[in-house]
Each structure stands twice: as structure tokens, then as C-alpha cells.
Amino acid sequence: MAEHPAIRLSVVRFKSHKECTFRDQEQSHNTSTSANNWENDQKELDEVAINEFKIKWLGAVEYIENDTANIADEILAIGRVKEYELVIVGKGHQLPDSTMMIDIKDSRLEHAELGPVGDLLTSSGQGITSSVLVIQDQ
Image (cartoon, rainbow, N blue to C red; front, side):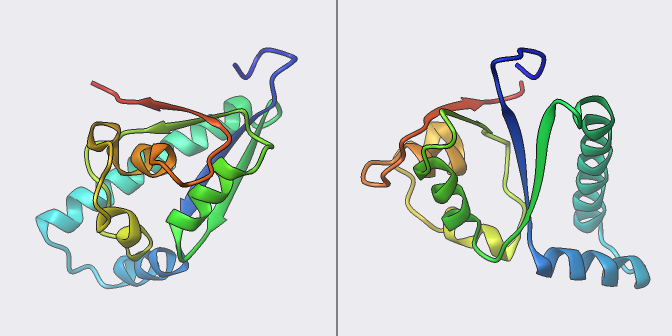
């Protein structure tokens, strides 16, 4: 998709101010459990993947890092604007225990098989104008 001249591709990454602050504090206080180690490993893998993506595609793909307190509202806003014809989201195996994910994790899923973000974008009454593709890595 990124190589096609008629396609404009944007990648949006959501982060919260609280997570960034927590990560800085966690690095200065080296008291972590195995659950925190797993989460830190996942965050580190994400950082590596994002850095590789930026090196390879930054000229061809718009990269947006969105610091937000309410990811559900931000996701819905992306789906509602007519700027994006297709929104691709990952299903994921689990959501991080983040305050910005509470609205999504605590809601009753209408389409649980699509994961929390896919469900949010495909649930009725949300006013989503974009097509939605949900992918899952096996």
C-alpha cells in the first residue's frame, strides 16, 4: 500500500501522558515483577518495530503519534472523519492495563470476535464512515 502512488497512508500510534510518565519512573526505579517485565518487553518490541517502520517508510507514510487521555474518543474520531476511506486495526491478544484503554475494555462488546478496537469501530450507532479491516496475527 505504501508504495502505490495513488494511496496516502497514515499510521497512528496512541500513547498516553500517564504511560510516558510511568515508563520514565519505572526506568528510574528498578523494581519490576514478571508481569511488569513481560509488559516492558512488549513495549520494547513495539519501540523496535516503530523505529524500523520509520526508517523504512517515513518518506512514503505519514506517522502520527497521538498522546491522549481517551483512546476510545480518538479512535471514533478517526472512523467518523471522511479523511480515511479504510481504517486497519489489529485485533491483538490483549490490551495493556492502561488508563486510556479503560473505556474500551469495560464496555460490553457487540462484536467480540473483532477485538475491542474493531468492535468499537463496527458497533452500530457510532457514525463511522470509514471501512474497517481488522487483522490478527496468528
